[in-house]
Length: 372
Image (cartoon, rainbow, N blue to C red; front, side, top):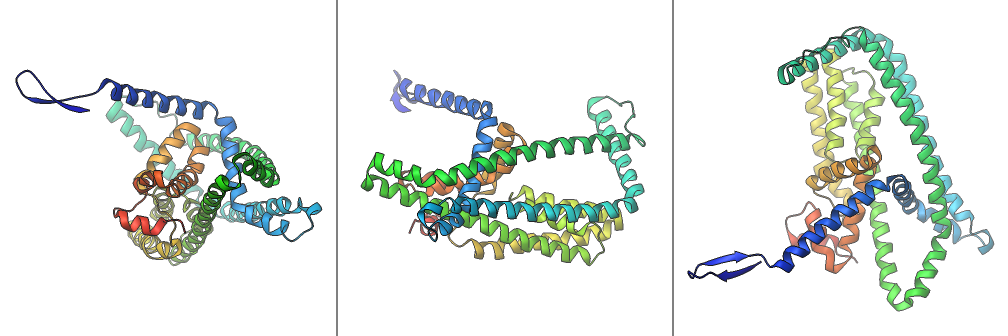
């Protein structure tokens, strides 16, 4: 864009054709990339998941590989994958335990849940009639709740089956990545040369370490938050305690939206079970827990970890959910954090990392994220 004078001597801004062409070319390239990422989701989703798994457990494999003879180096990747399987086993055991507890308590709330379903359905029908002028046929009210719940159960089973198949593929790809990681490092060194490759390897190592710290901090915060949820809700006798604590732990990996969802569900349960006064007290306590964890405990555990702006997190969730569906929602935050960390380790791209961060002071951002 340039400033020029017209025939009357007035200064006007005009857009250079080359600049406009470059902007349009960049926009078309971005649209093309998004289309490719969306179209290639069946391939990219397992690869992205496998990459995150491999990065997370790589230190376990390296530790074992450095302590066994070279001919037994394969034990390193196997030990790393055994760690992943152990975590999945603990996760599955927790789900089974919570499922058993929930299944035992659901019959006591069957009538209340049916009533809430009817109220929610009536509210939705009222909104439809008010805004769309369509009163509906009322076929889903009352007894239709059982059919809707059975349909929901079937959808959950289908999603679970697809998730299991995806996890198997992800674990297999992660194992291959761990096995071939030393070979690929040697290939890169021989291709680029030791001197040119040293800086790159150092930066990649630092990025991986910072990303693992993000996972560790998020897991620790999730465990503490889940325990606090269970303790606070138990004071009011809210049912499904372990379910709410488990959801608080899982949704902690999704900032902002995760915290809102984790807090809203037990508040709705308190409203249905004990009334509005108890629900307000429950909501106040959960809000205090989220504030303490987010503003006091979290920053002290994060240290020099790069924190992402909440607006960037929400935008990333929307973008990746649009591109990859539910898998995109799961991978959105790790991918955004990894991209931001990578940008912060490249001097020419550090301004973009600053834009993605939650900091407004450039000097504080530089001091906090400068690679050592």
